[in-house]
Length: 255
Image (tube, rainbow, N blue to C red; front, side):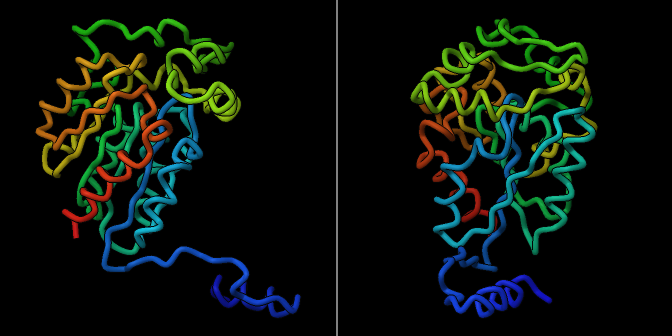
């Protein structure tokens, strides 16, 4: 039974109206959006942007990265891309930019959106990308466990990762963060999708996790259409409407 009929049968059996839950209506003529979160986060990091896209009739999928290796995250992303009905606008935040750089070679991907994200060259790693630029303050506060997974203490989340959101929100972000295997930062991408596909880039001018100068340099290198926001490392949390607008611009250009 298809999900719609199943849902209707559940409501009918209870005597409720099937319209009690209003599901988003997707416009099949528009590309889908697949969002790849970064380190120290999960898919809920995009909870403010997703409804803004859905309100425009866009089908959105947030990948839940295992954060165990680059290969694992690329595989999870490619599965999500493959499940879409047509063209895809692929969005990556932070570490997610490295993931979409590799996974973005998928045939369904029409364009890429980098949000305060890494954009390595083919054959380069996330760590390689930062060479020659100052280490951002937040990168000095990683906490490692016995198995080599890195996380952010609450103070670092509040002061360096998301310094422009309310403290209570930063506390939730600390609780829902996904630790990342440290070795992943040294794993090299096999492809650079930005070399052959149009890209958009959001630079966070107040980023304390990636040096803003590095963000600007990467945006220029990949010839991206660039928007700069006076925001922390997580503009999707503090400036969701402006982030959604950039994604919508990519969707409009990818039809």
